[in-house]
Length: 246
Image (tube, rainbow, N blue to C red; front, side):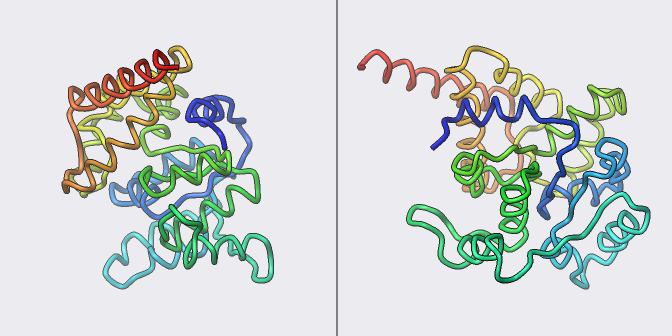
């Protein structure tokens, strides 16, 4: 099994050509604020929407989201792809959605499809659900991006400023998107830990997972930077104590 640091470093060496497989939560963060065009500018020809995700976005109560997805497909900004039956992809998909290994939770069709496609097609998983998918990111060695990572990519490529990202972030929060941080700037400060020494990076990524679990358990959609830093510091102390005992 890969370590948390391996997962972090895998994210750091992503190429610029691999397809991105979006789950419903990550894609809808951009659809809800009607800024899916940012994805098209950032990842031209790389956006893949699993058929299961398309189905989840096609329910009658959110017709405007489906219309925006359809426009992406019509404009050639995204493709909808299905998992073929009687394939390894399909077998793994059924396993994740019906009978996962002990210690693993059953996950939804959209998330499972995105995970399986990213694994089998050597792509990048785009998902915000760290709680349920982090174990698979680690076990399968998946490349992984969250909404925050995507907005950071856009800023680094000059497609949007930090102020613009903060505005988008607030719009997403108002649409009840769970992003883990109260602002994009807070996210930037927190993830900067990934570029520090390996053991700190491990703790930082683990702290992000634990923070999302805590937020979901308590029904909180975003946390302050002080709370995030407290989680990271606690993880550091726990790691240091473990090293000292060894």
